Amino acid sequence: MERFTALLFSISLILLACQPTPGDSSTDSGESKTADANPASKGFNAADSDERAISIADSVMLAMGGRKAWDNTHFLQWTFFGRRSLLWDKFTGDVRIEIPADSAVYIVNINSLAGKAREGERVIENPDTLQARLQRAKSIWINDSYWLLMPFKLKDSGVALKYLGQDTTQAGAPAFVLQLTFQEVGDTPENKYHVYVDTNSYLVRQWAFFAKAGDAVPAFITPWDDYQPYGQILLSGNRGKRELANINVLDKAPEGAFTSLGAELAE
Image (tube, rainbow, N blue to C red; front, top):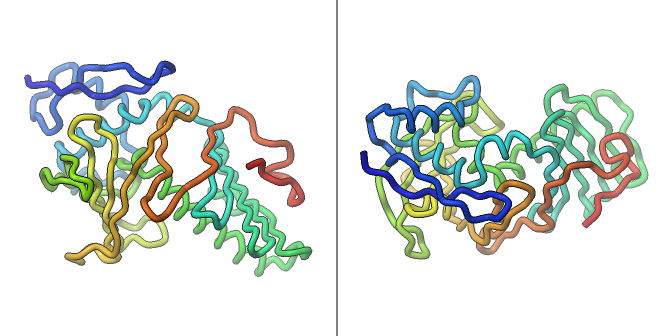
């Protein structure tokens, strides 16, 4: 069975591991272990996905640090395009969002939609208004976290993966191309993405966004560049003309981050 070498991030950052060829239809023990190491989320659309795309998605997870490292990542912090800062407790679902231009702070649990909000000096107390603000905060988290963490979410609930063949990125790098479509998940299930995975490193190097799954031409294409180690995983903040900054992986959240509207996230 032909094998490629996949880049596996560790404490020393460079560790090579043997990886079965994406799409190989054999089911030897190595392929089984890879699949077992990265189980799909409940609700992943396996029926509309193909084996080669799933195998490449597993290789992406390995290249980003591996499923265990991702599962053990607790707190993630980043600034989205200079507009707002987010802190996410991946274990509990608590999210803090600060929007300086609006002097706004939202604290929301994305699972229960419980939380609190402040806009300027005014704490939002009306239940209906608060619920609308918390729903908005969850939508912000859905969008902003996908721009940062999409490579870890290739086998999420509602996702269907298709292998479209090989192509080159706008920077000229050879890549496997995966198509992501969605079913009854997120705020915009009608979207579609083409994700370009480097054929050597298995890191995502580019994505193309389609507003509608039936669209032939993407609304935009951006690179995924400048991967850096954060905690035990790799993350990329360079999206060409856009940037995700102040990226951090934390073992402990700042005091009061998910309880106090007056607390502030450290830059």
